[in-house]
Amino acid sequence: LVSYQELDMQGAEVLAEFKLFIAAEFGTAEDAFHAMDRAKNNSGRLSERDFIEECQRHGFTASRALFRGLDFHATGSITRDELLFLDHWVCPSYLTAPKNEVAAQEFKHRLRKQYKSCLKAWRTCLDKDNSNRVTWERFQEGATRVFFHSDLPGAWRYLTAGSTFLTLHDIDPETANRISHFQAFADEQFGSMMCAFKLFDLDRNGYVDVTEFTRVLIGFGYPGGQCKALFYCLDVDGHGRLSRRNVAFIDDWARPGEETCEELSDRADEKKNAQKEKKVELSPRILELSVPKMPREEPKPLGKRMLREMRIAELKKEILKSSSTVDGHDPETEDGKEDVAYDYDKIRLKNLWLRDRTIHLLQRSDDLKDQETVKLPSLNLKVARPHGTLLKKRSPYDVAS
Image 1 (cartoon, rainbow, N blue to C red):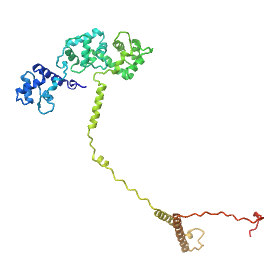
Image 2 (image 1 turned 60 degrees about the vertical axis):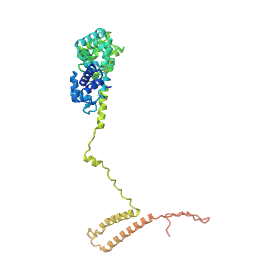
Image 3 (image 1 turned 180 degrees about the horizontal axis):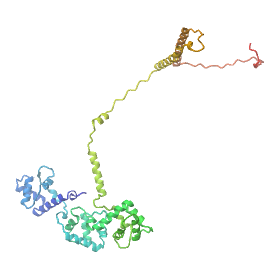
Image 4 (image 1 turned 135 degrees about the vertical axis):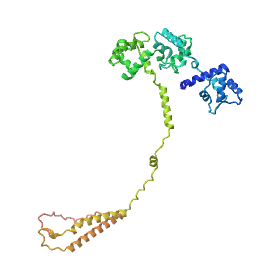
């Protein structure tokens, strides 16, 4: 769930002050509306002018933004039902509290006194889920553990500086910057803090002392002057060694200004919904291409007779083309044969007759192929030779008769 103060901190502060004014002056929101409505025309509605005037008459400075926020249905006036939610709204006490620096310093002092280390106090008392973000409810629970009963809302307002959550940077900036820098270094060099711990544990005993910790970090380029300070910062128990429990929280640590996994998933969902709602305008050319075209009609298959005629025409053309060289040939031009006499007309007529006969045979052969022929069974009868007859083999020297 998301609270109103997480969305609009300034608006939540104005609304909390208005609720406090109603509780002190009228008791409930319903009584406040009836009192303001009776002072005017008793119509069951309060216009913007009437609302601001009545608030000022009772000692509260109302703004136009407050009126528009209360006008839920945007009708230009406020009704009784639109104010009733104020009686059920759980308003955090820090929204109306002023900043208290003395209370904030006292809270830090109690943390150091009880836990000896700000990081240990932060992880043990406040940030139990290792997210580096503490809400107002968790802050109240932590104050109870350290027996802090002073101005808790004022301390919260001073520490958070107008934010809706508390970080280690608000309690101990030096330690927070050291851990954030080390987290970025571990992610870049080793991938995660748990992978880095496997390299730190040189003797594989499950613990890392200051020598192993410093040797590995310097080998990977970490500033040598900050290694021991970082080690003793992480060693919150003061045992002189680190276990997986002391460094595992760094992988889930949220650096200042970094979004959490929930915020990233929410932003991804918002982006996905925005893409769904986005209307895409297509150009006229794309719309023209999207119209389906009529399918082309395939040519009808040719019949057997038409195919045969086409084949005969191609063969006829080829025969005429090949025989044209014979018609144009003149034997008298050849050397050594000028004395031979030829009848050229007879030769041309014979060529034409042979070509026509060839075409006629091709047509006839195609006609015979198209007809269904019945093959009769053939009887292979052998003539019996007379008994006692001897066959004489033919000799190559026999004279043919």
